[in-house]
View 1 (cartoon, one colour):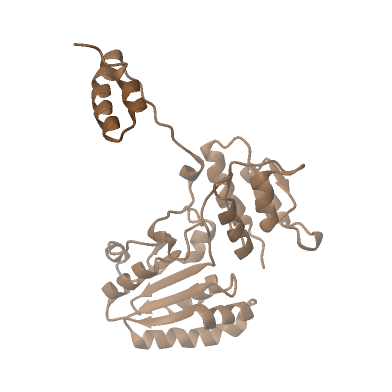
View 2 (cartoon, one colour; view 1 turned 90 degrees about the vertical axis):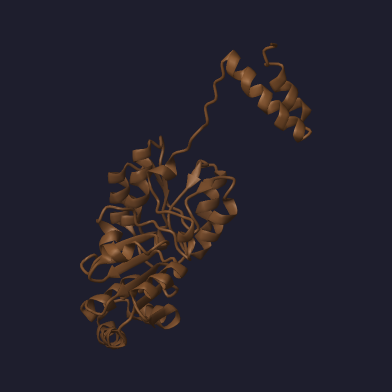
Length: 297
């Protein structure tokens, strides 16, 4: 439904910083058309090779390789439900970043932010696609009604009004809570991709947030800034996976190996422990391998 040069930057730059030796991009070209902004972003971010292919077939090509597309070690980046499902299926053959679902925004507001601002913040995710999720939580019922009025007022002015309307109808919500603490509890249950704390003291409220992909602090910090230029990555866990996942970063393109180095004396000491545990598990080859290195008294 759209081209995202910003996503090229968000995926490619951390990989380059991490030292990935070759970065390969696949990009669909609907009706044979390439998006110049996407290609420009790829060039600036240091993408080494680009292939005009998209969808689940692109994921398969990257995972297994073809005559023209080399197999890779890890696949990252957003896509539709077919791309997400394909990434899930090839995991194990290659690494992946996450199974990203539709975009999400959850706003907690104390009722003092301009309702038009919040309505547009909800639109900013709803316009991605019909399955996007936009939720506002507030202890102020009058404020929720004011935002609803702003939604009705502003929606006809939007270029992607049909998509926004469907998204808000199917997956949007205005939730009344008793207080901001209850709002935080609800937010933690939802574990949203994007969480705006549009309140007087966002630092205090943030101490009660356990699960969110990215947290936008205060009335002036619109989620849209994080999508493009605030600094942190906009590739974030969705569908409540923020309970156990983190934003994409340099660390996603790094791995670790354990290093073990024993002296003769160290091997002798550790061998006695290893022998006891190995024999307790009836793994005698393990035990004898360690015992061979025990220095006799």
